[in-house]
Amino acid sequence: MQIAGHLPLGDALASTPRAGVGWSSAPAADYVWLAEECTGGDGEAGLCLTFVRGLPPDAVFRRIGAAPGVAGGFPIAAYAVQSGTVLEYGWAWMSWEQRVSLSVGTAVATVLVDLKHDYFFYLVDGRLISSFSWYAYSLRDGLDPDPLLADVHELGLDLDDLTEQPLPSALALAERATGVRLHRADFIRPSLVGSFGQAGKP
Image (cartoon, rainbow, N blue to C red; front, side, top):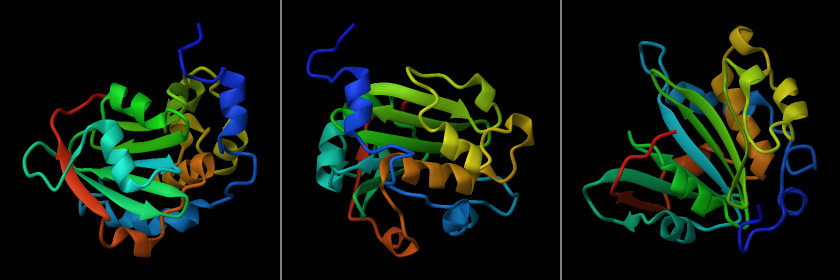
C-alpha cells in the first residue's frame, strides 16, 4: 500500500543516502571516543542518538514536536553536524510516530543502548527499512532489512552473541547509512536544547 506523499520503497532507497553508495566508510575506531564518554564506571553504556540527514536542528525540533529552551518534560539536544543533525536524548526515547515524522523525505538512523536494550533503527521516507538488536542481527526486521548488510558485516555487527564492542560499530553504521558524521568537536556544545512531553518506546 502506497502512503500518500511517500515515494515507492525502491525509489525512496535510491534517492536517499544509504550504505554502499559512497556516502561514508567510517570505521568503528572513529567513534570509540563517544563509546568511552557514555560508558559509566560499571562498564554499562547509556546513549540514544539519532542521525538525521539534511535537516538543521530547528527543523528537526519542529518535526518531532520538541519545544526549544523549555524546562520540564524530557530533555533533548540537537547538534548541527556535517550533512545534517544529531539528536541526543536524556533518559527518554523517541516515540515511533516521531521517528516516522522525522524521516519523511530523508534518512535517519538511531543508536540506542541502556541497561536492558540495544537497538539500531534505519528509516527512509517514513518507513522502517531495517532494525536489529546488536546481539541478534539474524533476527533483523524491516521492509528491506539487508541494504546495510555489507557494512554491517564489515563492522562486525552480524555475529549475534559473538558481537564484541558493538557501540562504536553501531555509531559508524549510523554515519554510513545517513552520511551524517559526528566529530568530537561537534559534541561539545549543542546547537539547540529543549524538551518534549512524552517518553516513547523502541
